[in-house]
Length: 136
Image (cartoon, rainbow, N blue to C red):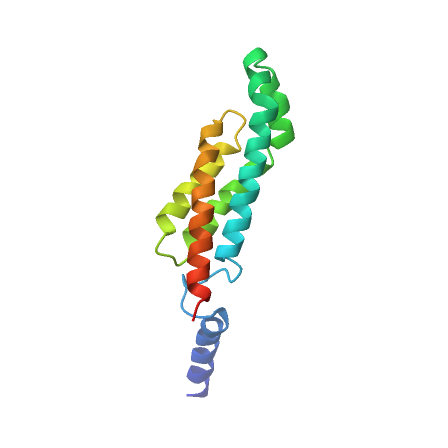
């Protein structure tokens, strides 16, 4: 009997310590504020990329190598932002995910600056949702 009780305790305790059953893991730091900050940053970097390289790429396609060398790191951050949007419990989750994909296109050297234009309206939507959550 003691062995059975011990075995059950050993099986259940990791579930309790993990905060629930498998698959229920949540990133406690995935918040609207974090999504806002990341999308804002990606918008700035994307516009910087297009201001710096769009004309150069038209004149010399070899500039793509330099652009990717300088800004290639940012794509993993953009993908992580899509993940943040996907894990948020929000009525606007689909819009946030779609904007995350637009931000991913925005920061690509081969992307279009028009993809960056989808970000500011979503930033306003995030602000409004955050204010709604904060009001009593």
